[in-house]
Image 1 (tube, rainbow, N blue to C red):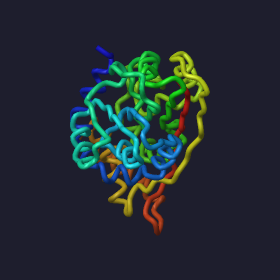
Image 2: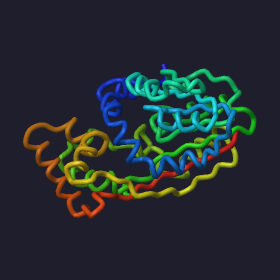
Image 3: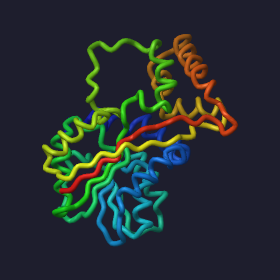
Amino acid sequence: MSGNEEQIEYWNGKAGETWVTAQERVDAMLAPLSAQAVAAAAVQAGERVVDIGCGCGATSIAFAERGAHVWGVDISAPMLARARERSAGLDNVAFSEGDAATQSYTPDHQLVFSRFGVMFFADPHAAFANIRSALVPGGRLVFMCWQAPRENPWMAVAGRAIQPYLPEPEAPVDPQAPGPFAFARDAYIRDILGAAGFSDVEIVDTRAELHIGDTLDDAMAAQSEIGPAARALAELDGDERDAALAAAREALAPHISDNGINLGAAAWIVSARA
């Protein structure tokens, strides 16, 4: 048991199916950040790469098209099925359903990469110690993770509007609990990677404008799939849900421009050596 059973159940249920349905929209929206993460990985033809939390396969395919031999690992069967569909015809990429925290690796990979896939481990210290075992001596770890919500208006604008309608947590929320913002603190990342045996840790502030939608309706649809409004839809009913979604819509409305709704995003690109 890895301790990640809750995440495994979550990503093999409605969440995984939703991300498959939204795959094209998500890839297009995240493209400005994804391009920076892929560039930072500096993959070379012939390199062996592990793509952790590969999801629907966008970054795995990008590396394979550059001539690398790519192994994508994810816990979500629905998303992996989509990744296999998208990569048909590429013989240098393969996908496995597994938990990267406990996956058995061979130490013959030059790169371990992840785009927003490493913030969900129940025990990140143990997970990264295991991930390190996949790398050759001097091999590279490169991953992208979100900075704090306040640095990410693309989620925070609607999130702040919806928050008053959500039930109060029964206990104080641990900001480093598994979730999108678990690695928001750079000092926490350095602690985890240092304890796991990585060296030469670099953390780069990375920002972009994300296109949330061409219209307010598009933006609300996107936020209802993978953004804060999705939580309102999942946790609220009836009038409360309607009020929360109306509040999110009202918060997004001032951000409409001739180019639709574009909001800032902030991530870390983290690199280290085994």
